[in-house]
Amino acid sequence: MTSKETTTSYRWIIIAVLWIWNFFGTGAWLFIISIIGLIKFGPFDVGGLGTGEGALIVILPFASIIPLSFIAGPIIDKVGVKKIGIIGILIFTVFSVLRGLSDSFSALAIFTICMGAGLGLTYPLPSKLIGYWFEEKEIGTASGLNVMASGLGIFFFEAITLPILLPLVRHWRNTFLFYGILTSIVFISWIILIKDFPEGQLKVEEERAPIREALSVSLKNKKVWYLIIINIAVVLCYFVGKNAYRLLFPLRTGENSFLHNIIRIYYWYIDFGEPHIAVFIIAFISLGAMCSNLIIPMISDRVGKRKIFLISALILMSITVVTTGILEGLFLWISAFLIGFSVGILASLIPTCIIENVDAKYIGTSMGLTNSIANSFVLVLTLMLPLLISDRYNPISYLPLLIAFGIISIISVFFAQKLPETGGKIKRVH
Image (cartoon, rainbow, N blue to C red; front, side, top):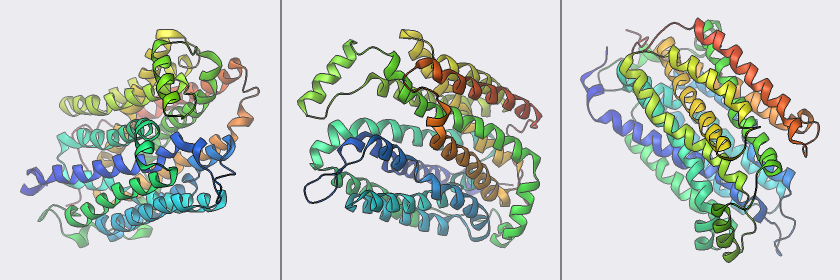
């Protein structure tokens, strides 16, 4: 049973704090993509990042996100959301800022891994809070709003950092301080506003699962494993797929569109080099995800169905992960939007299904397990990407990898079909 407070406006304060954390936190992590070529070290600003070093810096947080999100889940179930959130956001903010003080690639790498530890601690938090604070018919909508913030953070801060923010702060190091200020605002908001439970809903001692019990129950839950497999397909198509597209699109797309020429003039004016239209196609994938984050979970809540949306999105993703790699012109942009749209549906409904398929006191553990295993695949396959593509300068060489992702997505349909229909139903502990 939910308490009266659950149905008051305070639940929207909870989702607002989660939203700004995901928005600022994801932006503070990934904005570095847009300034990789400008990062230089030493008193004379020499010895900057090469292409390989830049790619490594972007994925290094996964080295700590993976173990910490796994560990954090049962700890959150035992200790509570607020305390772990404070620790995680503080670690993230401190080391995010320290990245800007790095005097070598090694220092930047160490600070980046430590920053990822903070992120890993916070990964299971949103699902735990949404499960307690929102009613059955709002779980999908709340999860969609939360996930949308991450996509918007990537889209927005990658877009503004290079052409707008950097000229204002005047040096690449100062951008890290700027984003540290933003996440500090979240840190203060979390301390002041976040509550573990709605008052009077449940006794805390009833909800704090022992760590061994939480791990044992989550690992034995077949439905959690079905969702893990689905999540692996999603992260492969989205993260590893986007990394492949970053290499593939410059080989196939033209550079003489009207939009590209306008952007080229602006970049020339602020002396930031030559942009590539591939950046904007990849951003279009994020745009598609944001649109479905907001729309589809709300519809799913209204009709009380999850499986039909999961299965449809997996089928759409299995097709568009391939077509985005082979189409051209307008069809390429449509396909890029649709793969993002399908990923956005799945990214919202997977945590929703976790909330609805496990007891409330095990949500943190189950979500941490889901994220940790899926992100392990992202890290390994991203590092292996040069080995998986036989000739990076030949567009045909990318096709087997994309087809493999499509096949994994189709296989995931089988596991989505095995899930029970849980739309509008939450497994609460009484």
